[in-house]
Length: 311
Image (cartoon, rainbow, N blue to C red):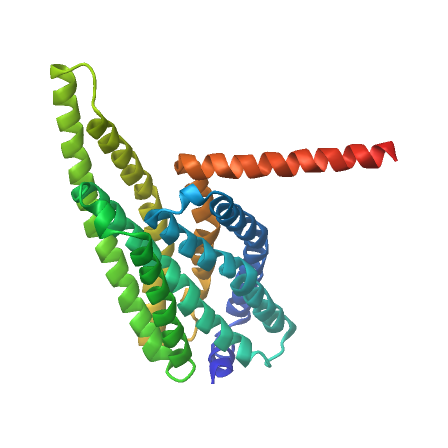
């Protein structure tokens, strides 16, 4: 059933030029997937290792980031190799890859949906930290963050299983959920922007009246910085997920002979490779922990090279 989709698409190509263009797109996608694998794996492994080695980093916000890093890591370990295998079957002219196509849909719904929903949860978490800063420690605990992450994984696993029997229906559900997540993130970040502007005006007025700033003002500044950091996550999320959602909706609704969503899959996977480096760049604690790990690895490598040289 899943295999016939691609077969119909290939048969529906109206000219050799279209067929050649399709094969070129498959090759480009395969090359991009190959380049993304080491970047995706290395970045997310570093983030997870940094949190594992530093218990002080295990705050509710970082727990959500870890869930995101795990889903992104599996994209590099599993989804990208599956795409490369499918591309090899297509280019070789083989038609025995229906299970791989089903596996790709299953994995995309499971992992990419978890990533998107977790990024949405992170935006809500940042909003709560700014809007209810005094009550936030009681509102968002490590246990609740873990429950939120587990809910995303379980819910998407069920949807992924259902996609085996009702592929188009579940894809439409995924598109609706994607639109909902993007909408919630847009509303949340707009609210964060207004709160940050309000805090800036407050701090500026207080600085003019009092030269020294108290601990509460410092805490507000740190919360503002974390909120602004997450804006860049939102931009990347929007750029990576919106084109895929629109192209999937067109493909499922109108069923064109050429699956246009194929062109946007690498953009979706690129988000899994970009995310960990955004954490490292924008989060000081994670950056320090990652740099410490890298220094240990480099020092160990230098020692091994010296020992090998002495021998």
